[in-house]
Length: 505
Image 1 (cartoon, helix red, strand yellow):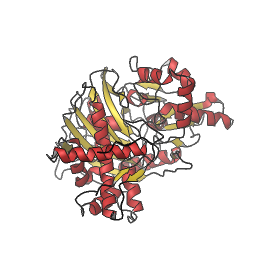
Image 2: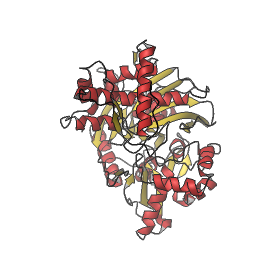
Image 3: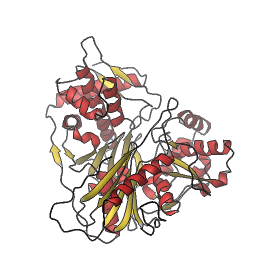
Image 4: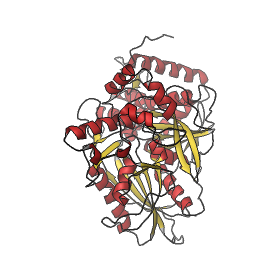
């Protein structure tokens, strides 16, 4: 855990602060943010465990998640005398928490967004109900895929019932609703998080009766859907966190990063490099995106709904960490940093491609049968080539999603912002710009999600918004021929991963 002060020396002390909670896959962060300047005054972080009990399963402990959140919050509050004006929450998406309505205690593990244990169940549903995939896509804007929440909710509810728990006592929700319930006692979710469940109708912005019936999820088990700035109750008081503080804003982490970058109109977009990656751009409305790309709700603010197109990549930061461990990275060293140092020693990957389909491939392929592989390995392949192939594998996946988002001619991302931990690797950022064939604006502030939801909270409380730093522009290599050759080799590796015939050059 680390506490970091980014307040400007000699600056006037703020009247109060916002408490931003950024609950991610591998850690929970908390920050006290100046509501007028956006400066992070104090921040703290707590790591989270993650387990893989059986192939395809990705679990976390809900009580540990809450304890880590509270510990990070208390660390910030312990070092500050500022009045907390309000709380803002950003969170990992699609992950499912189940808890007891009477006691508030968690029931079973958190089923992580990467969890694919319900892949066979989804396939069986599609086979039994030939209209299921189209019904899901036409109403929710999403693909029938185990990454999203509804299949996990069904699995969790069935597990609770099998354990002898009355289904009427079970509360279901994504991580934002779990935190809101622990903080305030209210069972509520932000509309952007709700739009990632496969259960929300994009038109009405309500839980859809047909989708609830399809997945067997009772409405009574689900949280109330609210606008992102509608208010989510007041704290009941826990530890050093006093009672009565309003929770004024909730945004899913990817949506919060988009908001931080001021990407509020089509033509702008962002890619977040986390455990997985999200490529998102605002859309003109809820019209369906190309196959493999989601139409989702970015946020609802002041009664105005902003929709977005998005593609999700299951393994990016986790792919870098896996390759780094495989190549012998020392404990405590960032996977991205370790691989970047190795990869900088060679000009290219020498024909090696790494497809990190650990639990299949998500956007734009939505193929859970795909398998991870290394292609093009020869007797001359070195650790340095493998490191570069891992970095390129992340960048290629992002390029795949951008191309898919734009494939119907109805969207174009002219300005793409980048945020997240892996942006510290300027080699990766250069590879990304090269493979996209367009400039990349790399955020100077690594905490884009926390700052995005804090910005919304500041606006909700009537503060004038601050402006983000413009970031660093990374220009692409103008050699289009080399870009095309690299993209073609990657496509061949993906085809092998999916068990498909490869078209040779």
